[in-house]
Length: 237
Image 1 (cartoon, rainbow, N blue to C red):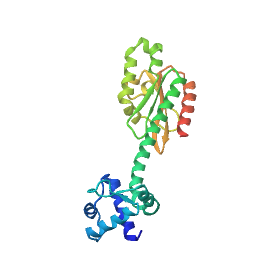
Image 2 (tube, one colour):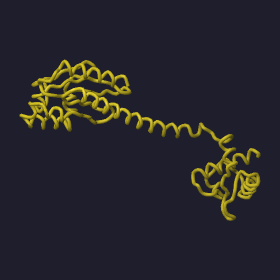
Image 3 (cartoon, rainbow, N blue to C red):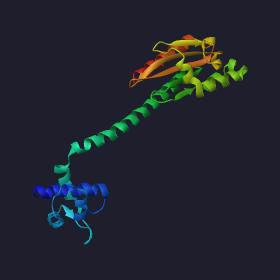
Image 4 (cartoon, rainbow, N blue to C red):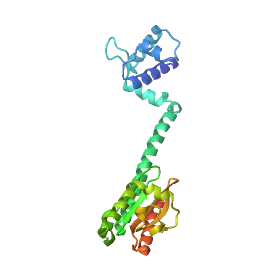
């Protein structure tokens, strides 16, 4: 196979990969600007490549398609990774970011689930990269006497978790220390009969908050230890 035939074979395979349609001389000239050859010359070279087993003609009036032998030569000698690296890398970067964001969400949810199993209160966490909050343990606090005797308190906490938790967090100091907000320290009226404890964490450079909400009489010492352990686990990601 000479250099011209090699370039022709590579161009035919590239076009066939893209279109899945047998490639004829006219289509090849229309889609490729690298050949300054007549249609007759290209047809002759395609005939030679066919005779040598690199191309085949599925029908008499059809163009050519690569054979297995043609593909083997193509992947061994003609692939130019540099021409595809950017396209592949862009696709990879997009999928990689989606993958890590999904893993971030899973990690945050698993941390909230772990914390909720350790405490009799509500565990929650914000998800970095997303305007999203996971919370578990509402059934825990609904069994507490304060919430059973005052259903509006429970309703207020649910409203905060489902819509206004970000407002609350924006107006509070959050860092890697455990911070406490008790009673009237809460900016939101729905939270003023409750206690909250918060701490921050980071995943891939983005900050989130993990914390506990419960009745004002919750066991702060126990909950602090539980929150620190789970937050440290989350930070180690």
